[in-house]
Amino acid sequence: MRSESDVVSARSHGYVARESAGSLRVRFFRDVNDPDSRWWRFVRPVGMIAIFLTVWGLAVRLSHTDLFPGPGSVARAIGELVQKGLLLKYIVASLFRVTWGFILAALVGIPVGLVLGWYARAFQAFNPLIQIFRPISPIAWIPVAILWFGVSDAAPIFLIFLASVFPISVSTIAAVQNLQPVYLRAAQNFGLGRWELFRRVVFRASAPQIITGLRIALGIAWLVVVAAEMIAVNSGLGYLIIDARNAGKRYDLVVAGMVMIGLIGLVLDVLVRQLAKLDSVRWGYSQ
Amino acid sequence: MTAAPAVSVTELAMSFRGKRRGETIEVLRDINVLVEPGEFVCIVGPSGCGKSTLLNIIGGFVQATAGEVCVEGSPVFGPDPRRIFVFQENGVFPWLTVEENVAFGVRGRSKTDCAQIVHRYVEMVGLAGFAAAYPRELSGGMRQRVEIARALAANPDIIYMDEPFGALDFITRLKMRADLVRIWQSERKTILFVTHDIEEAVQLADRVFIMTQRPGTVQKIVEVKLPRPRNLDAPDYLRTRDEIFRLMGMSLQVGV
View 1 (tube, rainbow over the protein chains, first blue to last red):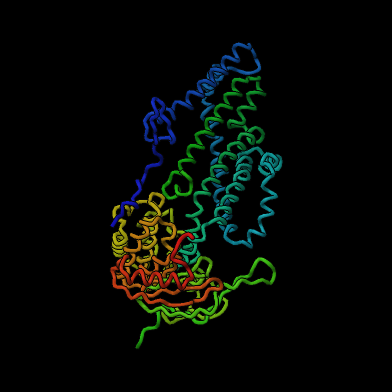
View 2 (cartoon, rainbow over the protein chains, first blue to last red):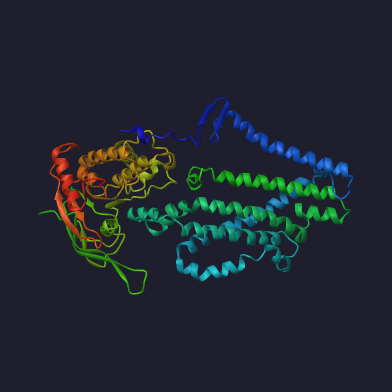
């Protein structure tokens, strides 16, 4: 009974429409099945990084500046950190704080967002408060955090929690508020109770937008941990940067810290992006 | 004992509050209809006549301003799994696979029973081989088939359909209609089907309720006494179709 017109090729995401006009070939669409494009998808970013490193190195060498280290000395500084066993230690320390602050924020932000998104009256009551707290930079909380928690892991974890709980809860609220009514009506029609409705429909239907919120929150959390470590603790990549400057103007180590922060930020983003590829949420993102 | 009518609507009226203060918009007025068990009834009317609103009231999603709606002998207070609504905008859950969607409304059955029911209806709507696919991988017509299978799997007595094929192309729509009639004949459900498409109504229905412009009332009930399978160029088919066209005040000529 399957009809021809109903059948669409299930997993094709793009196709080529090439037209030959003499020697000119016009490509209207990107073709992901083309092996050439896979190669280019790898070469373009890597090539760009190589160009960046070359320009950086040449600029430092040709200007004979001592205000900024070149890529070679930064690489040696990273090697030095590895040898002393500091690099892994600092990365672990920073990631530890981010993980805890972020998990706490998700554990609070997602349920709160689901409830406030669902109950319009609760939203009316709490929303102004949220909007007042949200624009206060977590950095502004540093003095308070030190006062409350001293120089300990708790202070940066608290700051990361503050930084990520708002994007998570705000995007969860928006997700629930923008639920397609047809899903709710279908679910009600099948006789779902309130708890089941939340678990099987509301949460599932908001999942794509919640994941987007988590991704934004993790980016902010990573920004904040570095700032927090510059002040409130004595380990981590943020601490490395401040310590290298204070303890001997080792700017090669400062930039080494910056490079590591950037690379780990990239890895974190790639990891959260994997969440968006889950089959049960992929529908929520345009392809 | 005679069975209660599947749906009985008595002196139903519906009005919405308008944008301006004190303004009310009368959508439905004095609706009285009966639908017998096992019947296939189409409701047609010009757009904006309140036919979708009427179906939503019968389905328990919207409360009427006045009048009474009884389904299978008891008044309607809300949606009920014994009567499943098939939505125009497609209510298939995109986070579930085809078979998970179809299984959604199967309740109180063992796992093997459920799997059997799901298999049966996935096959019946012509989606065998797509059980593990996600809705985003399917075409619009296939998604609508999933929703019909999901409705059937819940084993309702009545299925309400609100312009379910409205967004589909002409050829797909023809096929969907043929399949729907085949399924209706084998499953013996009562179907209440809203459409603005007169041909669709004549192809599908035992009886057609024709509604007027807003405030909508049922202007006429046309019995479609055509044998099934229906022949789309039989004189009787064309006569019935033209009668409804005329009742709705439409010309059968295009242009001047």
